[in-house]
Image (cartoon, rainbow over all chains, first blue to last red; front, side, top):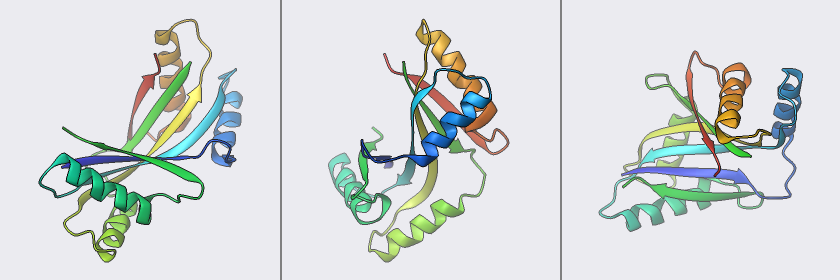
Length: 80
Length: 80
């Protein structure tokens, strides 16, 4: 089953990459852009008999590898 | 308005990061995981009078900066 894991920095964690993009956008003439936050998407094909089983596996993968739980949150979407 | 720009590698473009994650997951005991693809999410707050105006601005930002159109595709979602 196709799974999408979205990993974003927790609120309050400084996002230098986002800040850099914000400045670059302003330099390109895109004024007024705020709160730029950058995250990751990991799409995978995970074997499993049910969406619940696949979701649990993907959450375990996120906890173990895909996200740094100290500074990042993650969400899991299983394609229907 | 809140906007989410999702940037993924085009199909057919080699994804070494995805391959590395796939191998690491296997090492951790997650067998059978395939087609691991990694992308970026950029969330921004973009000024504009309407969702259409904001979407057009965000698409221009993606074309100009956020995505490398040679190897990446992007999609834009404007929060209602």
